[in-house]
Length: 186
Image (cartoon, rainbow, N blue to C red; front, side, top):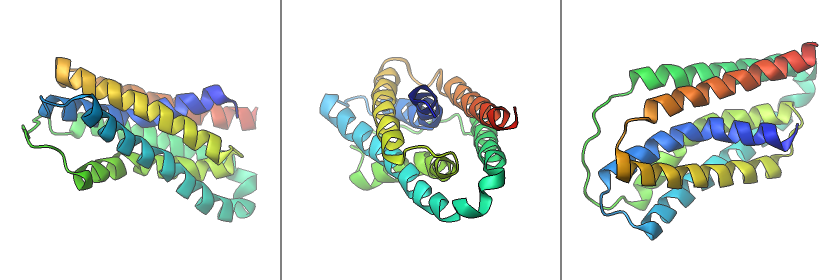
C-alpha cells in the first residue's frame, strides 16, 4: 500500500480528533501554544498507538483469513465510515463551557475515545500487509497537525464545521474500503 493511501486513512481517522479539538478550543479560551501542544500530542499518541495494538492482534488471525481479507478490510472501513457519518448527525450540539484547565486524565480519555476506530484500522492493516510502524508514524503526525488546527479553529470560529469534517472523514474511509475491495476483485 502506498504512503498516499496511508495519509488518506490518517486524515479519515483524524476527523473525530478534529471535532474534539474544535470543541476543546471553543471551551478553553485561554489556551496557549504549549497547552495546545500538550493536548495535540496526547491525542496523536493515542491515535498512533491504537493501530499498532490492532495490527498485532490482526497479525495473529491473518493466516486464517487471508483468502477473504479484502472483504474484512472493506467491511471494517465501510462500517467505520458509516459510523462516523451517523455519529455526526446524532451528537449533541450543545457544548458546555468548561473554563478549567483540562486534566491529563481527561485528555487521555478524549484520546482513547477518538482512537478506537484506529484500533480497528490497525487490525485491517495486518490483513492488508501494511507496515505498522510507518502507518502509526504517519497517523500520529497527521493527527497532531489536525488537532492543532482544530484547537486553533475552535478558539477562532467555534464549532461550525465539526459535523461536516466528520462526514468527510467517514466518506474517505468508505472510499478507501471500496478501493481495497475493488483492487482485490479486479
